[in-house]
Picture 1 (cartoon, rainbow, N blue to C red):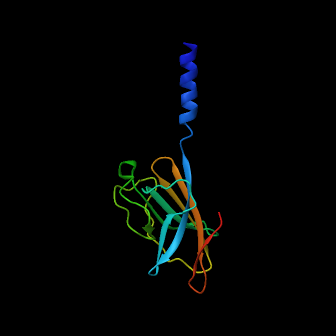
Picture 2 (cartoon, rainbow, N blue to C red):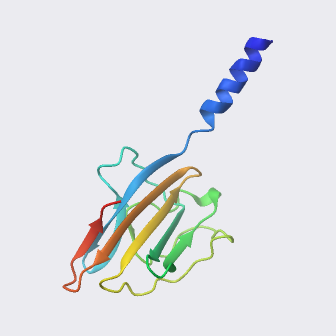
Picture 3 (cartoon, one colour):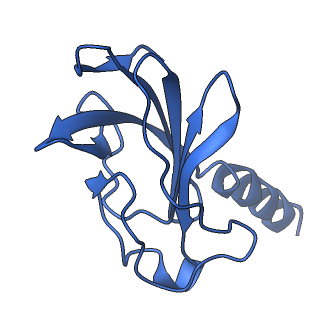
Length: 136
C-alpha cells in the first residue's frame, strides 16, 4: 500500500511538469510580418492556439487571436501578422484586430501551443524598414 501511494505521488509530481517553452521569431516576407519557431529552440511545435503582439512600452495589444482547445491545431506556424484564426475563438481572449506596426517600437509576441506550450519573442522595425529580432 505504501509503495502504491509513493508511486502515485511520484507520478503526480513528474506529470505536473509537462509544460515547454520555445522562442518565436519574426520575419519580413513580401512586406508582411510572419511569426515562426526560433530554429534554436529545443521544442518545435507546429500548432498554434493563441498569439498576442504587444507594444512593449505601451502594454497595448497590437493584435490578438485565439481558439478553443478543441481547435488547437486549426492554425499552424508560420503565421502572418493579423491573420484570422480558424476555429472557435476563446471568449476569455477576445480577438483584437491587427494594428499597424510602427517603426522604432519594440514589440513582444507571446504564443500558446496546445495546453502547456509557451512561446515568446521580441522584435522591432527600424526606420529603414529592416525587421530585427531582439534577444530574449
